[in-house]
Each structure stands twice: as structure tokens, then as C-alpha cells.
Image (tube, rainbow, N blue to C red; front, side, top):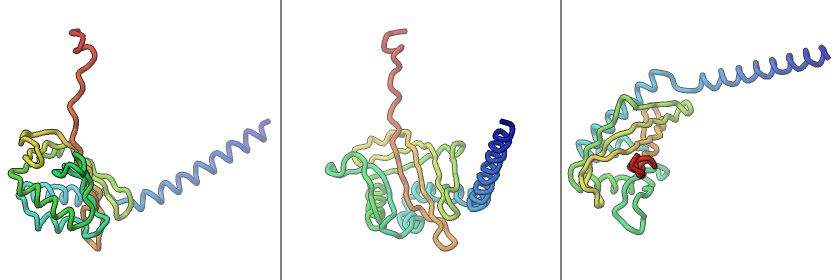
Length: 181
């Protein structure tokens, strides 16, 4: 019995050591604090360009690929209320249309900006924000959104590979408040 227990302990320790080695190697492949700082800076620049309606500047921040994605409010009923816009031409047109609709103000909560490394050349950022816009039937009232961006390293620069803007629905009334409690 002791031999079996000893063998099981050795096997478990060996498996754990192997897992720790793989986890350590994977961690070495992830970007560090310097890269996270770069993405935070790029995120700030993206917000600045969006608030200035600088379409050329925004174009330069996006990966110039047919695989680039922007998820945003749609003005075309056949696309649904929100839709995906794929590729540089569709994204440029969507950004132009939004900017041409009137004032657009993106106000991220930078205290909640989170940046993580997925691989050596893929990062992801997440930030809640208020967006004020009058595009596609929106009334220009600031509303809560979440912005999730996948960043791809192209040569020595970080580009937006996907930008997903999600509206945050209002919180449902609690059951207790519906009963007057």
C-alpha cells in the first residue's frame, strides 16, 4: 500500500512539475507590462481620434485586412439593429457615416480599462464607456457601452483587428421593487 501511495505521489509531483514548466513557457510568450502600456496608449489615441472625427487617423489605426471587424449600430434595417462590418472599406464607410451624423463623444472609464495578452502578437482591451451619438436613430443622450478590442501586432505597430461595441441594456427592475417592497 505504501509503495502504491509513494508511486501515486511521485506521479502527481511529476505531472505538476510538467504543468508548471508548460505554464512558465507560455507565460514567457505573453507580452509584458511595456506592451500593456503601449496598448493603453493606443487605446487613448483611438478615443482621441474618434472624438475628433479624424477618419484618416482612425483608418491608420485599423489592420488593413478583409478580416478586420467592427461591430456597431446599423442604419440599415436589413442588417439588424447592430451588425458586423468586415474589411477596411466597410469599416471606413461605417466610421465616416457615424462621424457625419453629428457629434460623437466616447468617454471611457479608464479606471476600468483592462488589457491582457493573448499571445505574443495578439492583445485584448476592454473598457466600459459612455457614448453620445445621434447616428441611426440614437437620440444623442449618453448611454453605457462596452468596447472590446482585439489588437494585432503588424510589423512593429499595434493595429485594431476587431472592435466590438456593445450597448449595455438597462438593468431590469428587481422583483422586490415590482412588488412595492
